[in-house]
Image (cartoon, rainbow, N blue to C red; front, side, top):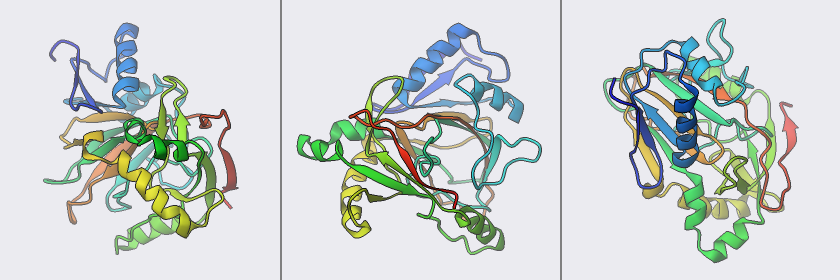
Amino acid sequence: MSLFDIRRIGGRIGAEVTGVDLSTALPDSVFRQIHEAFLEYKVLFFRDQEITDEHQLAFAGRFGPLTQTHPMMRTVDGTPQVIPVDGEDQRADHWHTDISFTTTPSLGTTLRSVVLPPYGGDTMVANAAAGYRDLPAELRGIADRLWAVHSNHAEQPRLGTERGEEVRAAFLARRFEAAHPVVRVHPESGEPSLFLGGFAQWLVGLEPRESRPIIDVLQGYVRRPENTARWSWRPGDVLIFDNRSTQHYAVNDYGRRRRVLHRVSVTGDVPVGLDGRTSYALKEGE
């Protein structure tokens, strides 16, 4: 491999890391630089990695304790921390933050290419901190005071297949709802960001029909093209994004072709708003 380097790929989000082998234990000095870049660029991309689930678990584990199980999604046999993100199960073609319908959304998520379609299937990641900075002062003052209820009973598209319907039914079998500050303060950097995404269903104190236009306006700032990075997968690719300050979207443009990524997540903490108040649960798998 080439010498270790971190090269930004966009003006507001994303960097590619070269010259590292994720099948080996990274030196502490190298990992410190990767972690600093993770906080700064929000999503890091790695090419040409020949790694297994065990290697992916070890790399993700450098960022914090691993999430042991997902509340609803199936996992790899014998390895409950690894989720096969399979296009035959579901397609997350909506902007979202992983498990934001719980009180402790993931700190970060790693994805590794396993089976790729011959075209399409890109992953997009948006910088929610940049979205917050883009808000006009008048909108920012409103957003600073808002709280949103996130639920898994949200955008769950139908694939029209037996397996897809089974996965969809399992995802919706229990109901999770958590109230989060619309503006979340990053626990490491102190940076505020818009904490919304497709699981945000309504604003506390407002009806869903009143909430939706406000949520949509704020979301529009997060997903501005200049605030997003788009990654075209190749064999051997790995990425990790900071789930506390990003949203992501799996582009559903590969028809009936197979697309499988392996996902390993890092356990997060309870979000905190600008006023110091913390998120709370409304329903926990009822």
